[in-house]
Image 1 (tube, rainbow, N blue to C red):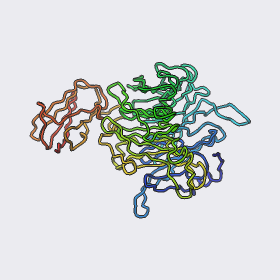
Image 2: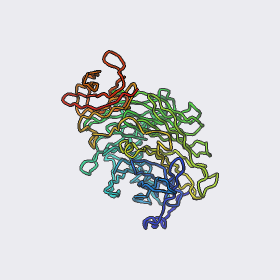
Image 3: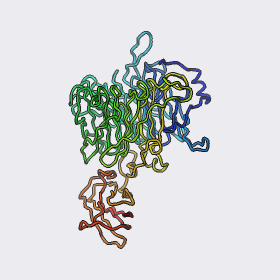
Length: 557
């Protein structure tokens, strides 16, 4: 495993003569690093609609870079397949500096983000800079088909070794950056910075620190954002024991961010490192604890929390169906409203440290394991022992653009295998792209998209009533809606003759999303006197002060 300076290959890439080695794998599409070199491609990944980003770094943090790929439909041997073309290859701005450019990446729509957590370092050993700077984040914005514009962000109060940019995530035009070694509340207490883009300029909106901030907490080690809610991991928090870990939830109201909850594992214990990885979707949070020992030393676990009002409650603890000592299940996590994926990069199922990832589907109040995916054996040009140390599952991501996913009939999942061997070229790295429905046996969700009718800052433009789900149904259904303002809210259900069947009153409700099964209006298919209504067409009307809307639904028995 060595880092190499491939200047000749970079010139070839610039001239457009490098091709992507890619194959349909039967359970996903395999995208190798487009050029030779043992540079752990897939160290960090993220995916948004038809675009994914993947990074690589060297062992000492120099020569880092990221690739951005775009998907095109292709026909091979009469079959439609995914084809991923390189849109961009961004190198660290200074390849002599050990800035760890590409340590973490994120993408949402037309904005891609790259962390370089030791950018700006001045420490020199043996004649070469080795980083230890305050850190920086690079933001690339797409115009047309190209991610051309680059903006470099630094913390206004940044200091050496803060690790600003160690973690990054983006939702719409809100960016959050972790600095786990910031010293505001003591050495390595950590912090997170929130930036908002307005008129094409990124401005800091808040600096987040927990209410019980303490030294050596590593708050900001990992972060996730969904709309107006941020989750921040602090894997060395001591509430449940030394290095047991925690995660914190912050919510934005207007321009203000306030801590809403502190999450800890119900069975948390010393050295679990709960909060080492985190992710969030509307109403759901997943937290990795790769050192959990329920299934063996460092076998790992992941915890799912759901939102009920302003509270977050632990819903389920996930562990591997084939647990192994030191597998680090929970070292990478991702979640949407209906599915989750957990990486175990040091699992030995295929080979020593070959790695694996486990996918889960939500059914009601439970998360069910659907499929375990692993590094692929014996690709063209490989021999049997080359899956050793692939670390498949070191990074995972799910496309959270559910509206776009429904329109194109698929949800895409990305899994990094950073030390994969390609065509005999050691540790070059690979990213696997899966269609959740076809490859992972996870169908599209029946619940509505949570991004509808919001502004760029997540504020609701206007109230809206959405289609009930499921529809047709028997015997129960949910009515999703969004309120632009606080309002006295009710839903009335009518038959085809306009006769009132049932009235559901909810009193004064705050402006916000009422879209998931936990928050949407629920109907059990019964009339006002508790009788089950018959099959047929019905109508439901949402009344929220002056707002009124009606939709059609079908009971099918």
